[in-house]
Length: 300
Ligand SMILES: Cc1ncc(C[n+]2csc(CCOP(=O)(O)OP(=O)(O)O)c2C)c(N)n1
Ligand code: SF4
Ligand SMILES: [Mg+2]
View 1 (cartoon, helix red, strand yellow):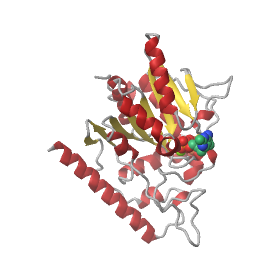
View 2 (view 1 turned 30 degrees about the vertical axis):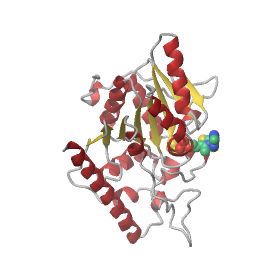
View 3 (view 1 turned 120 degrees about the vertical axis):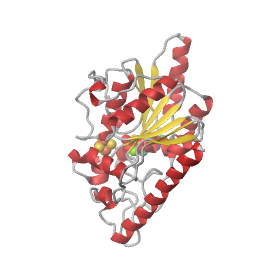
View 4 (view 1 turned 90 degrees about the vertical axis):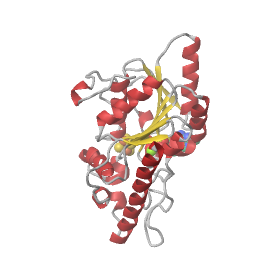
């Protein structure tokens, strides 16, 4: 059981991530940590793998009002496990979270994360997915969407951008038998309630937060939430959760918008032709159909 936020008015006013950080103006990843901490409360310890978010704290300065630990990019989950076990020896309790990028999660730290889930360590792992190694300039990783332009997948005479379809980490973590969910800055109540739900489980949990990136995706800095909203309205980024291997879709648009509306706001898709966009639309349609099928098949 957890204390559900029913309306925006229920969101706690107290902030544990204050102003003065060096992230880009309008950075949705920072918003994601801010909202998570509002949902979790003061008795929380944050582990941050090397990333844009690890720039938040530069000794002796920090915008955070909770304890924060920087880990190497490959071992945030193992570091969090160590904290949980040390607290147990001290007979103390805090919620321990990892707030890690997609590069750390999908690629460099996946072994550490998988081990944490397999051992049953009570850590809430939040991956903010900006679909690149943003902090080092925006290189491709296995979260990068099909045909996206990144520093290492530039479109040109012989290339259309990224040709490797991204993997689905939410399903990979759900297959570990733990709670796994997608979330978005455009649906703050859904996100913060998932964070609270995971906190109350006192078990390993994985939440993946869709995190538009101003310079990496190339959109106007005021449009982060709009980009994220269109990702969900077009079913490019559906909101769902996996619990005890059952899929529940949290939001079904009454009318699915064309994926073009999401793509056209961003420079990383500027090179696409109408045909390329139709290919992406086909992929989105089949992923959405598979998700709907997965939901109904698990309920019967
Ligand atoms: C083992 C290792 N490889 C590479 C790096 C360099 N590095 C520092 S931050 C970073 C990007 C991390 O990407 P992600 O986890 O997606 O976070 P983001 O930068 O997008 O916020 C990289 C590659 C590193 N610190 N350690
Ligand atoms: S590069 Fe992207 S993720 Fe990094 S601080 Fe800027 S907007 Fe945020
Ligand atoms: Mg990233």
